[in-house]
Length: 273
Image (cartoon, rainbow, N blue to C red; front, side, top):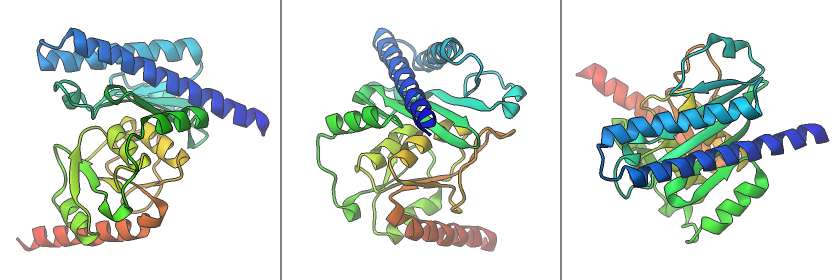
């Protein structure tokens, strides 16, 4: 048992360090290319961060498989006991826009059918949250500059660029404001840090978008699931994982019911047209 706990701490700290260092690399790149072409900056950020993470994982965890948004799909990962799921730059659009802080680096480990470790770095905010309890606690405590608001005063976070129409109705149903924000990692971190009531996504994602945020949120004691309430499963043949709910456990029943009701209403409305 102790060996297992030690491994989880070690892996959590590794994920934390890699996400943080990739984030520092991206911050430097953003400064260097501040006056350049935004698309070139996005592409360069994706590539540089991916190359760094893959090289570091190959050095420290050579027997583990890697699934990266920017990598080449390798079917051998499906039979691997341990798979690192990484998004080298989550929120590329926001990364390329001067002054925006809602972009992230995701690093997670899926092993034996569950998320074992994860880290979400928010470089522009100076924050890294991870499953390594000491690092996560220290980061959260040192960066929470304002006390959390009462739950009923907090917004529900959704996609900044493509929120589904029914999501605003869900927010209205539970008496919350719908707030758009970039990056799944940034939105999940806001919920973990008590700055948002929930994060709901229904516009389509892939495993690398949610693996690290889900790992950190679960370690923080939050509810994390698909919008139908079922668990998130990773290292699947098709990495498409279209929806996600992150919230306080006490809020989950009401939010899941609201999503089901309002999504069904939206579908019936479309069918009637």
